[in-house]
Length: 265
Image (cartoon, rainbow, N blue to C red; front, side, top):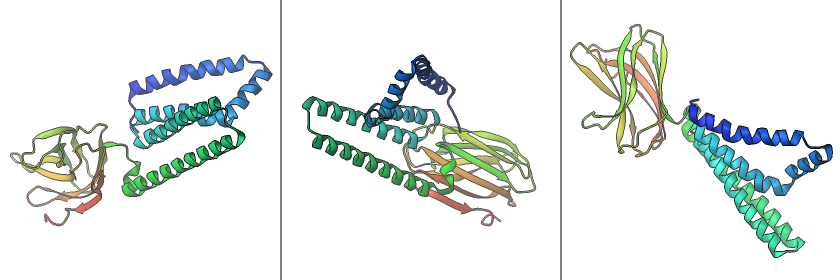
């Protein structure tokens, strides 16, 4: 999983220093104060207010570091619930409501929390099923290649472009050489938000003077977050064009699979 170094450093500073200070303060407390502190941390009031807010901020920060939308969503839900419950709790105290109102408030909050957690579970399940085997890959562009042929493959270039002109919108990188039986990959964390109806292409030489451009994936989204393509190169045809099969995932169309190992023979 790709991690931004500067984000990781900021995470360590923002969360490490306060944690260190709190632990240090706790260790200096006497036994009675430690029991009071532990009981406060275990109370429903702390868990559903301050606890939710801190947990939400933590998940959001982790989501930013690892570029995982699911962590950001979890963090947003906890943060929103924590703030909402804190406001209602403050209002409840100021109004001096009775025991019945407090019970209604308590069970309402439990119901809202349960609803959001179930909703979050369904969201995760939908994403998991929709992406299938490609769920394990990070957001961004992942290209994996396996050379199952008996020949060396050279000079592959991958890029986003429009079909009409093949002008490079985003260069994703090159593979200089791929030996028989070798596997390699290219990963780009960011996808430039430049126009929709673009495609992911790769370009290679079919002879000393001519190049071939093949489409790997059509990307309809203007701001795609995840594109995965797994390619198995099986050889070349009589004209030097690559024979390959590919499968993958992109945001709008979902999973795809095609086979160009026979149509070019």
